[in-house]
Length: 538
Ligand code: NAP
Image (cartoon, rainbow, N blue to C red; front, side, top):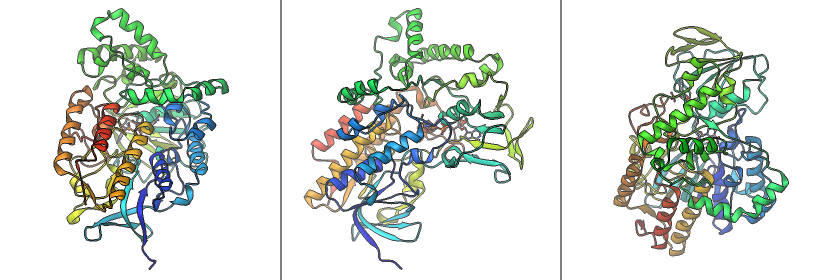
């Protein structure tokens, strides 16, 4: 038996949030240690190595804003930077501030049990090692638990098969191979477009199509990067003011005050703009007014029909069950054109469902597809999945997964009653899942750090959200959700994932706050300024 280590603060997870969180704690001279399950840092950008993985936030709005040195030194080479570069960036930041010495890798936290008498968390690592901490800060990500379909025979397949999250580090041969991709979310769309011209045959197994629009990526030259650097203060200020945490700002001229021709002219221009402009710089009505949403969805359907040569295939790629922007929008580069290639085939598994995976491929109700490689781009147990993955026991031995069985309940996405001294960065019901992630988590880390400093300065050893305040926040989360058309869609924003029991269609889990990033930031700031009246300090 090894001795139980103790730290004032334990941070879990060395992704985008954990890296910044541990830096803030170390800078304050707090005794803190970070535990990471993987063998190295990077989180999302360490894991998702599949071909085509890249930002869909403008790179210079995705990077950290906290260090002038980092801003001055780092050159983003593309408007939407690819995974290898993003991982290099996170390593560059961690190494610059010597953060690795405060991180332990291959250190998965399996369980956390709250000790009310000692006011400590007792953590058990997968290795069996035990650690105590006064405070635990979870930086465990919103999309870190990949989910595989529950198909019969999934282990029988004798070729290569993996979830995109587990795409191997070693190069995966593609040339001449028969590849099947299951899933057409943001990940599937990136993979399909990237590998279509590199494989022998590509068969896409699509259940529900997604709306998708051009990423419009481009290189960033030295001169352009210099101009971006000169504008960083303005860029971050713009992001802080926009609903989604981007530089894109909504159009408030009024959908119905323009003629249909004027609207189309505007959309033609938006279609050429980079990233989420088409979503976030569009008319605000599109996301709340069904008629406006229908008209715009029809415009995008027209774009798909223009780009896909076979009209039958085009129709299959156009969503009929939800309007544009009511699920998380995937962005694409030549995705629709991939279906014009002779070696790319679309199988609609709503029409001909997958029956089972066989030793040599995929059997649908209609045919058997012989494959050498199956790529499962089948999504994540989003937002609460990483919490369910640990056994977290709070006051009275209550398990967090039980409290959140029908959906999470938090105060501002930061604390949850009954689980004292557990502080969440990118927690459920914050804006981290619903807006530009790094912008949201920088605010989240700073706020959590402020709360912790307040407790330490006053000698408090126990922090817990007020139960009533938590209930009021959940109601606010539901109100914001109900105001937008997204309320009726099936996607991970609303907790839908057919591969996870209890997360099936028709049951909304209010997992993310849709009341805009500035509104959320203002609420956090007001709480801190008022001295955290809704937190019970002891
Ligand atoms: P996702 O959006 O949840 O998509 C999963 C896909 O797999 C859906 O098309 C789903 O179909 C399909 N699927 C799941 N289970 C299936 C089954 N049993 N049989 C057939 N099809 C099945 O997951 P994702 O594409 O990994 O994206 C998740 C999120 O990650 C994105 O929304 C985004 O926030 C983030 N992401 C970001 C980027 C980026 O550019 N930065 C790139 C990729 C991902 P149904 O819709 O019918 O369930």
